[in-house]
Length: 161
Figure 1: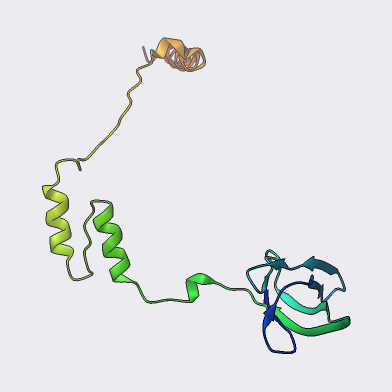
Figure 2 (figure 1 turned 180 degrees about the vertical axis):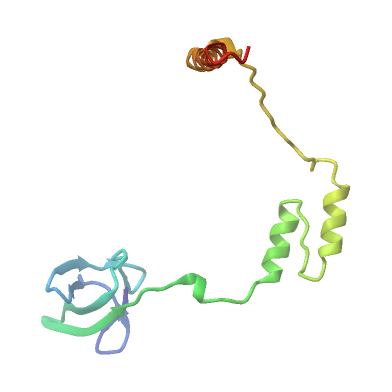
């Protein structure tokens, strides 16, 4: 917030303190005192949540209490929706500063050529093989032995052997 106070001759003065009170829609009030600059006043009140606020500034000029009041609204600002058109100049500057290259949507052939010509870009494949002895799987080993033994026993009983 910035404020200016003028004397009767319309000259800027800042020899008095200026108090500012801000009230939100729920009734919570915040009180501030402006900082003096060269010949005016300034105040950094921080960030406010979205909503409607009323304010009242007060000071004493020539022995008389002077007040000014008003309202302001804080709206939600989605900065991504402010500029929905790509800034190609900025993208080019970023590409130059980072030693990168910029390609447009019609330059897919150039992009492909650039990628295939770059020796730093290589296919990388990882695989892991793990060999395990079947004898370490006791349950499976016991199951195989039981099935083959049962088959042998059944063939022996019915005379197929």
